[in-house]
Length: 133
Image (cartoon, rainbow, N blue to C red; front, side):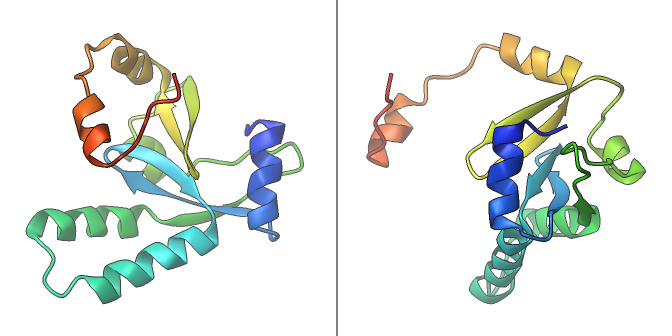
């Protein structure tokens, strides 16, 4: 179930009440249909000779694609192929990540939080991104 705030934002950008689910970096992601169309257009027009890694990413994203409708409570049904590929067992974590959301298996997300994460401050500084905290 999407939180009311996130659901309202999503519905403002997707008046049909639908969201696109697919796979990216082993996770199920959700975006609006308009975001998906813009992504596909860029992949198909801006990459004359994509690397084999990028071709594989595109294959996985296209194969995972499904458009689902939110019900009145803001719930979405996860198709079997995404549950399997996203390694979703039972409990999930829904994480808002910028203009998308990610659906994680709870145990895998908790393992991510327990990892020691590398300092990315130099990379952010090169891109002129300042942490707000």
